Image 1 (cartoon, rainbow, N blue to C red):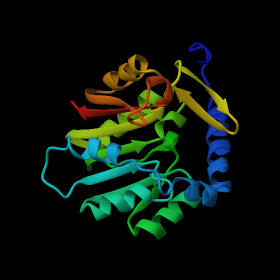
Image 2 (cartoon, rainbow, N blue to C red):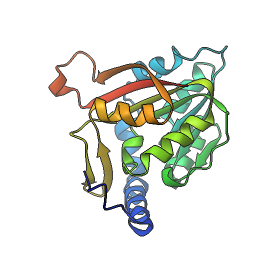
Image 3 (tube, rainbow, N blue to C red):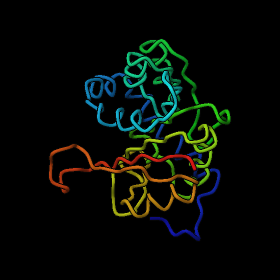
Image 4 (tube, helix red, strand yellow):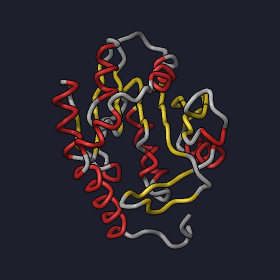
Length: 213
């Protein structure tokens, strides 16, 4: 992990965003073909089962990609809004899911307060540099209604961050991730590792569910 005393400046943060988003924009079609059949029903149900208000739920899908999970939420009777930094993904998601999709850089979020019952951040927040993560999590907390639920799933790692090819990522184990979320005003509801049914060494994904305090 970068030295906490050596903060990334605005130019460096902009470079991280631009290069990472360009990776997805240039590979949008291939990404869609490679992920459209991925089974994340465990993650979707882990979010939905903890929302305590009456359905349909208002859900923000942060990092919605081409819209696979947006369409699932709609088919389950809920009212999702997508958000992605990639212009290509945002357009694909609007076309595929036929719902509202916001194109927003994760580091420049502009979210309405107290709008959503749930936030679904599946394989997305690991792209946020650790120094910016507290602010981004506070923004997600703010856009949730009181008692709202946040789901996250990220590739886990030894609390390190940096470039993986032309994508920037921050990779945490549970104690560090738990501290970030607790500091941002969330209460842990559950966590688990994916894919299910494998040994921990074969489970690179850490999923967790949190309630807004």
